[in-house]
Image 1 (cartoon, rainbow, N blue to C red):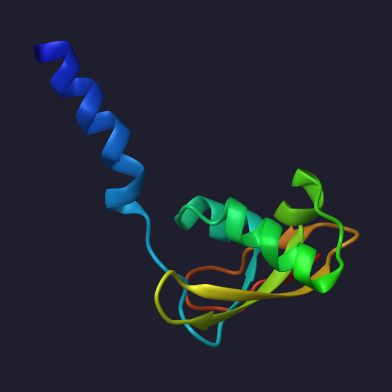
Image 2 (image 1 turned 90 degrees about the vertical axis):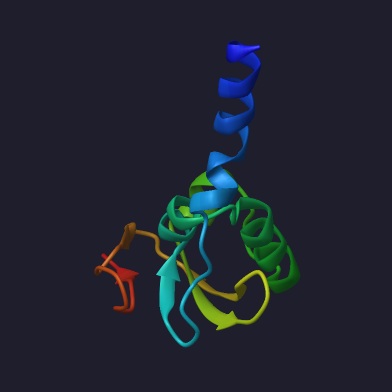
Length: 95
């Protein structure tokens, strides 16, 4: 009983702490993955833009936060030299 309760709590933790992006802010893919369950959404954004969809490309691309339910994002570009997280509320950039 105790083990199943712990397992259930651990299973929902990512959803409890996941948050949406801030509308109007530019994010690195890695930053979005870190703040919430964005990986599938980023994959779709890259697909719609005809951009590369490898895990590396997704994590090192820039996305514009449109906002709304689920924190809608649009693909901007891949950063060939890597992506730089410039802190909460600030636009991320390519290195």
